Length: 461
Image (cartoon, rainbow, N blue to C red; front, side, top):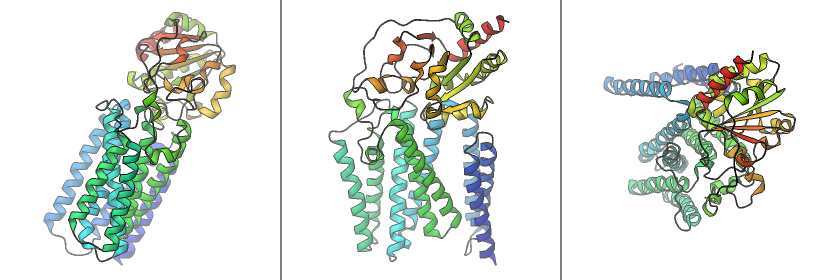
């Protein structure tokens, strides 16, 4: 009877995961979807504890619920206090913790299953993938927060990484074939997997990090799925499959957006283009514009497209940009937002940021949909975006971002770019757009200058 109840709760929890993931695809339902999936996870955890086979001492229950309480408080406070600009780092950190859990399952369960080749294969697969996800996510976290600012490439790093990867496969296969119970081999495999995760992410440039985050996320889901298979836990298996498949699909989308073949990601050639390309020198003079002149220009426009970027998140200017949109629309100006798939430093970063300020989801246009509209646009306002609007991606074969699909803001009648300075973007290269005849630079902190712009617009009544 208890087993039947357990399976029913696991089934219901799995359904909440699926529904929650579906609801996350829309900004209007994302919050409810997240809460629904969280309820399912709580039910699954409590079910696993309550219906556990065998006697459990009160001390063990105390340790379990104590750990859950500590983790809940730390996770809750961290998520509540994190700034939107730090969200990619938090995603990497949490993803790494998931990988670490999968690796620990392998370390704990190994000596219980050495006589069963199938279980042993599942354990080693989960441990290897989880270890790679953990160490790789930690390197990604360090790159995103600026601790590791530059890509580090060992000589022949492609060859080294590929050799280690195949070595992990071969060593795991030998352990399964030999049925070895020696934990020394397990720890050799464990530390080799940690090393591979570090070497896999270390050479990758910061501009390519959104793809890496998605890929590592799929690794963690796959590792969790192996844990669910080992324990016969349906909800763990379902959750792992959902995370793994969603992460894989998102990786493919990011690869397309970055024009990076997935094969190159897996085999370590990812981001190598930045190694040979230098930072371009000055390309000419730039034209500046102030908030008052821009206010007049926007006031007499018919169509305006706003391109948000990481600088918008840094300045926490999403609420001001919404106010600007409201004022312009009240004067008959059509306002939409152009969202590049990798704007910011993680997939969906700009969507989440703008949803926070109640921008209507229908106004967020994807790159393929918005690019044809730039030619009929009076003013494009680029706020804190850089590499995703750089024409070098189309014009300069020597550029590290050459071939990356970009937003065609250069086709608009006028392009206004808001930046703090002329410093290079995340890819470390100069932007040709800044020197174009139709481009004007609005220098300053996004929140400050946009607030001034809103004030000037209101004065035009």
